[in-house]
Length: 125
Image 1 (cartoon, one colour):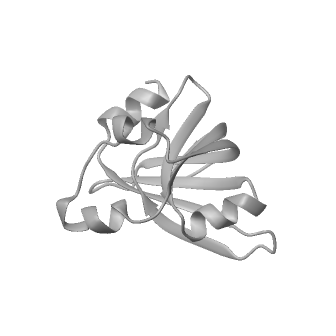
Image 2: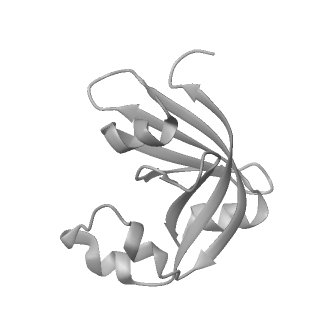
């Protein structure tokens, strides 16, 4: 199964881990990646620690755990570019959460594009 199709069908939770230039690590809950071709993915980010880390260190890992299983994927990523307040953000957002809509709309949003360096299973390899 192609990786983009996997993420269209899989249900679970994802964590995007980043580090600043000094190696201080941050991990945050993120939705599934948006695919642009076979080796480019994007995530929508607010102006918070994840975004700040990616300004000084372009490397990240996205860990996805499927619901009720110990299966999933690890995506090793390198940031290639970003778009601030891109109109594409509203088009590609999968879900809208009414309870956090006010928080979501506050401040700038970034569509951050990554090169997909490597894909590994959640456990092993």
